[in-house]
Amino acid sequence: MDLTEFLIKTATIFVVFVLTLVIAMYSTWGERKVAGFIQDRMGPNRAGPGGLLQPLADAGKMFFKEDFIPALANKWLFIAGPSLAMLTALLASAVIPFGSTFRINGHEVALQGVESNIGILYVFGVVALGVYGIMVGGWASNNKFSLLGAIRAASQNISYEVAMGLSLIAILMMSSSLSLGEIVAQQHGGNWNIFYQPLGFIIFITCSFAECNRVPFDLPECETELVGGYHTEYGSMKLGFYLFAEYINMFISSAIISVLYFGGYNYPGMDWVYTQLTQAFGTETGHNAATLIGTAVFFGKALFFIFFYMWVRWTIPRFRYDQLMNLGWKKLIPLAIFNIIITGAAVLFLKPMITAWLN
Amino acid sequence: MERAYLPAIATGLAITIKHFFAKKVTIEYPEVKRYLGPVFRGRHILKRDEDGRERCTACGLCAVACPAEAIQIVAAEREKGEEKLYREEKYAAVYEVNMLRCIFCGLCEESCPKQAVYLRHDEFVPVFAERDQVIWGKDRLVEDMNNRYTREAWTKEEARALDLKRANGEATNVVPRAIP
Image 1 (cartoon, each protein chain N blue to C red):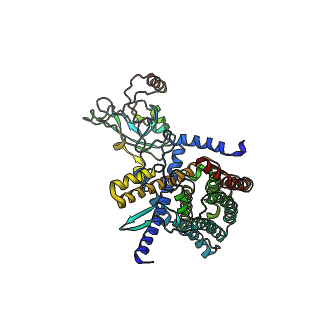
Image 2: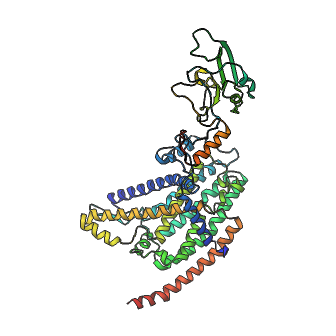
C-alpha cells in the first residue's frame, strides 16, 4: 500500500468517525426536539438558536459530574462496560458506503471506510458484540437491577439477532454478495430491495429496534421495573457513553437499513443527473458533484430512519417481557423463514419466468 | 387482527405525526406573558389620588387584616406644606410589606377604607436572590404618577361584565400583553 492510498484511507476513516459522532450527538438533540414536538411542546430551545448547543451543554454537564464507582463494583469491568459499548458502536460505521467515489487527481476514492467483501457479516459481528458492553457493565455494577437489565439485554439481543440474520439471508439470496458496496450498486436505478422484500424489511426494522434497545423493546433499561436497568449505577460521562453508544447504534442501523433496503446513495433519475453534471462540469468535478448529491440522499434516508426511531419511541408503549420473547421466537423467526422460502422460490422460478417474458 | 400489531402501530404513528405538526401549546414565559385576568392578585401598590397625594392614612387596618402579618406601618402626622404629598392629616412614614410572608390573599386590599393599597393584576413580585430585597418599602410600593396603575374591573361582578364585553368583541382599553 503506497503512502497516498494510506493517507486517503486514514482521512476517510477519520471523516466517517467524526460524522458518526456528530450525527449521534445531534440525535440526542433531535430526540428531545421530536419528543417535544410530538407531545405538543417546543423541546430544548434555550441553548443557542433552536437549542442547537444543547448537546454541548449536556456533554459539559456529564463531564463535570462526579465520576463515581460503587465500592463493591468490579472496578475494571465497570470502566470497561461503557468503553466496550462505545467501541463496538463506533466500529460498525467503517464499512458503510456513504456514497460512490470521489475523483481527486486521477485517484478514485471510495466514500467508504473499508470496502470489504464480507461487509454485512462484519457489521453483524460488531453489532452482536455490542451486547458485551451492556452485559459487562451490568454485571460489574454489583447491583441486582443492573444484572437483571444486563441479562434481559443479552437474551433479547440473542433472540432478535436470529430473526434479523434470517431476514437478511433473503437479501443475500437476491444479491449473492456480502459486500455492502455491491448490494448498494445492485439497487441502482430505483431497483430498491424494499419492493422485493417488504416482509423482510418489516422483520429487519423490528429486530433493529430490539438490537438498539429502543422503545418498544427497551426492556434492559426499563425504569418502572429495574430503576435504570444496566446503567443504574452509572453516572457522569460513563452513563453518557452508554447513552451515546445507543445513539450511534441508532445511526448505524438507520444507515444499514437504507443501504440494504432503500438503495443507499441511489435515487431515481440518478443517471440523468450524472450525465447533466459531467457534461456541465467535466468528468472530475461533475462526478464529484453527483457523488455529493448521492451522499446527501443517503444521509437523508438515514436521518429519516433516525427520525422514524424517535417517532416510534414516542408512539408505542413498551412490550412486556413475555410478549417480547413471543414476538421474537414465535412470530418473527417463522415469518423470516417463510420469507426465505418465498424468496428462494421467486429467485428460482419467478425470476427466469419474468426475464423470459420480458425478452 | 389486533395481534398483527402493524395496523394498530400505523394508526398510532398517524396520531403522533399529527401532533408533530400541530400548533404548540407552550407559552415561552419570560418572553411571552399571558394575561392573567383583571382580578389577579400580584404585587402591592400604594395608590395616589388624581392630584398625586398618597391616599394611605396609616390606620393600620391592612396590617391587622393581614393573616400572614406581612405589613408593618409607622404612622406620622402631616406637617404644614406637605398637603401636596399626603391627602389625610396622618400618613404612613414607613409602609413595609414582607414579600416572603405575604400570601397574596388580598385582605389588605379589602380592608382598606381609603382605597390606598391594591394588589396589581399585571405584575408579579419578581424573583429575588438577596434577603434585603425581600422587604419592600415605600420606595417600591408607592404609585408612579407617570405610569399610573389602572384596572378596569375592580370587583368580581365588574370582571365578569368585562369578560362578557370582551367576548362580544367590544373594545376595552385593557391591553392584554399576550394571549397565546
